Image (cartoon, rainbow, N blue to C red):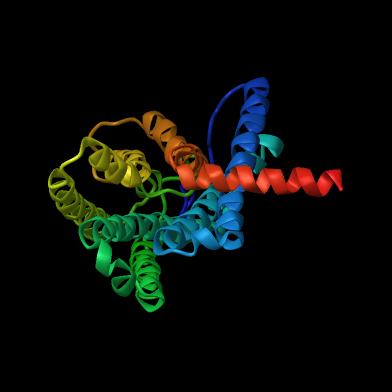
Length: 313
């Protein structure tokens, strides 16, 4: 329900309330970042599929991470670009719920997938001789299916809880997409029971993923400490460096947004942090895995060399 007592059929995304010139500038900035995100992640996926050297569990999971980053960004950025370009801020109730659902699926699946990747690195470092037999194609598919399945269940419950509320205070969402904290501020029905369920699920997803990551890296650190040569230690740790960076960036911002609740932080501050993890991080992940991975850099060089040869012919 809206302020006049009518049923809410659409929301108004207030987004970034700036001058027309600044909004035009932001449009081109976000468009550039989105194109880099699509190009970088599609490039990683194409490289993994085209190079036989990358038919390993680690790169199988990395391919799915790139896929999720594309989906994650595509759920949010096109709507944001449309708002900045046309000034059209309305979004239907159904489209808002759909955006929230897929955003939650992508965010949850990325949490689980980063945990799966940590477990993969743990098996590779701690049980190198058994790695191939432990990470069979069936095991990889099962782990990825579990990540997507858990994310879907979490998203169904969270979306159901959020959008079964009555909205009567206003239909103006002080955000640039349909996210949970600004939506809860518009509810006129009692939100606490549903809010507890929503935040409990967020806590369980993050806590489970972080626990798997921390335990995996405790075993990895113990295995690294047993290596006698400094060079061997550095080489082994380098295989985990990209993943650690991606985990720190993603979970750091996610924890800030979803586990702080309503503890006096402004929505303006939330908008800045949300831009970082919905727009910037999906763009950074392929760069992190490319620049810090010798195999990926060498594969890129080979691909560029083949392109130059084909163009010369």
